Image (cartoon, rainbow, N blue to C red; front, side, top):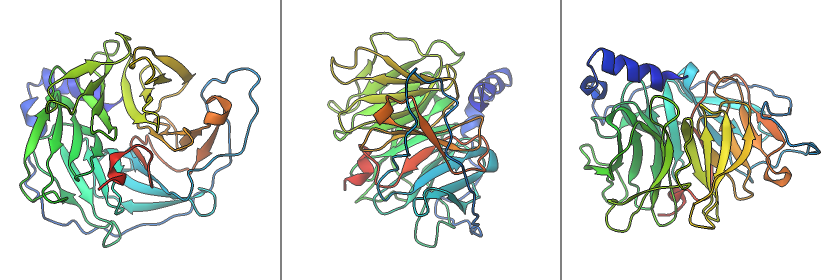
Length: 341
């Protein structure tokens, strides 16, 4: 399994759990100048390594209309962009200053937000200046993975080794140099990725360790994020990571340890769990308005696009040259609250 489970063992065996949230001394307002890189990577449309249902025919990719795709290329320590122009064949490196970036999110102004899983920091990468600078948001995190934004510009974080989901509070739409950081709900065990609906309820992959005792949860905004509900009527995942919501509030989950993609339908109050595809490890997850799913192949070099029109039985590989990619965000994402402000 990936770094999270290695880190869990390291923190406990060395008695260093508190140190996981250590501060390197980088100022939250200190820009890091990084020379942007660019490259052209070609790909051939291919069948996903996920197992397919019998009788499905290959179809052309249904790309997200007009939007580029942003990827945390974890193994290459880079944030990259797959350009829509040219059919998602061009991969551009935006920033290489984060050690093993995890989750990535996008606001409506084109700024990127990243969980720095190995350096225990959460960053904003402003679009102004060509994504060459970093701005650190808050402190005290321990292996932060998933990040998501609400309509007010607040940043929500899966703070894994602190067993917490946190909110970095914005003031007038911006994160200040010393922001207020709130802990939401309780009872989590190594939460990783997070997603929001339009009511700002927070959906969490409570990944847990060891593998095999994991769940997907919702922290209700009503009541001030004190109520936590487990979805799927007690369904036990192997190791849920990426999580995304479609326009009908259905929840999609990438169970990386179980190498399976699941759907938790909104109908019925999130009480059932359906298997969509299986056979490979996807970490982050995104969904477009047509309900196509996008996920970086953690043990691969591409991003997988699974087509809703075929019941997620066929897919296309987007981009190339990645190394153990994790987080993903779509430009103009569906049901991600950064589109509201």
